[in-house]
Amino acid sequence: MAEMTRVATDTLRGRMGWLHRWVGFLGGLVILVIFAGGTLTSFDTEIGRWMQPEIQRTTRIPLSDTLVEAARARVETLRQQGQNASIDLPTERDPVLRIRYGKADAAVKEALDPETGDALHARQTVGGQFFYDLHFTLDLGHDLGRQVVDCAGIALLVAIGSGLVIHLRSLFSDLLIFRPFAARPRAWMDLHVLSGILVLPFLISTAYTGVVAHSGAILPDLRGGHQPPEKAVSYDIPDLRPILAQAERIYGPGHVGSLLFGRNGVTATRADSATFLLMRDEADFSPTGELRRTVHHGDAVSISQQAFRGVHFARWVPLPLRWMYFGSGLAGAGLMTSGLILFLLRYRRTKEKDALFAVAETLAMTVILGFPASALFLLWMNRLLPIDFPMRSLWEWRSFFAMAVTVFTGALIGSFRRKSLFAWRGFLAWIGCLGLALPLLDSLTRPGWTAHLGANVFVAVDVVAALAGVAALYAWTRLPPGRQA
Image (cartoon, rainbow, N blue to C red; front, top):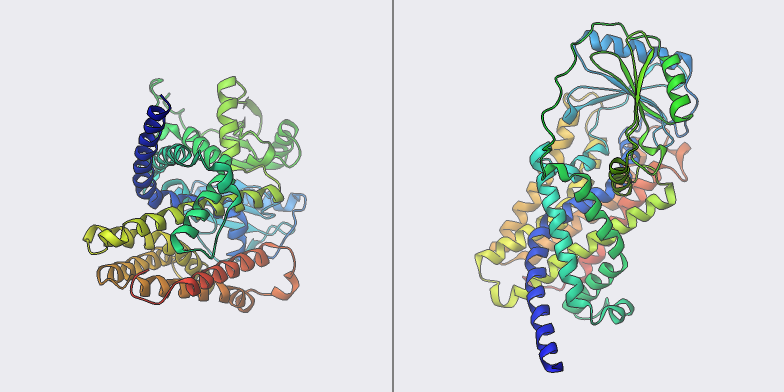
């Protein structure tokens, strides 16, 4: 009986190993991009501030009547021009008022000086929102992108489950062993297992809450058709000060997130950072500024959905916990990177001459090295493009994908010519140079940089970029001489 149990267990582990390898590799090519983008999304607001160095304010001040009236006048002007504008109120993370207008995938966000209400002439940029959108839809469009991302989340849960079955016997011993200077397969396996164990709760919660939060992308809404919209009413925007005052009495001081100007009045939304639950509550005001209704999503189903979204989006977390999210995301990215490399190492000896293996290595190299190279190149182009460059945000977007295509092309040539090591080493060196030189670029292109040394978003982005450069150069030194990685 014991022998039969052992054989059945070994058979199960063998089958789970096959499932883990192939689902892990094919899904990992997508999941790594999602995780890397999501990791940067932990500080998307701060990255956006780094990408607008003309805005030097670091602390939020109370809204002044001058600022509120200036925002109202600017929105009125944009509405007369046919733009659907909204107001994002200052927060601790982004202490300036911003007016948003344009298409959702190419929105313009104008910043107003908190004291005078004058427009801050900051460069237009894709900002940190770019990494959120990449994490959310892979830039494939809202519907298709969400479906692909949700399927990748399900694949991650399958890979986690099969990985647990494979390593369950040695789970605790693996937690205590890490041999970074061992032979490459052993070192990568140790990193893969250790990072998986350390961030296992984070991986499961992130994948599960991400799938649940956006399950509508896979499961259509079967509750019936939507109500037709009400007939639009032409109106002048009323005085916003009493609307803000009343909204703050409903949600609490500083907890109003934005003001939306719809077909029939003004809507004040609750800030996402107001509570652990991602409430999305609303207070609707008439065109004359009178409160008409409040929408509070407080039923049991809504609260459970809000909890999932709150855990996943982490808009409420304080700075130390935000860094914990960031570090866990990096560990998750390391888990997926090591998994892709282990897949290549497993099949290199027997399949290295096959075209399919060259394709696999090309895709793995593009994902592993293409994302950091493209992200750093985007930050460089943000500072190198002239401030008034036409369609500036579009060219930043193009620069990211142009670098990704460059990495793909180099990986493709290196893999099919069986000189992949040159491609790995070349792009690692390129990432190292981009990361280590970014702080110098920041100091040369940011006005008044010496006044902002210390703990702020500019220094944080520079330090993280430099550390990424150091990690890339360390990996470059660890690659042995030869033709194959």
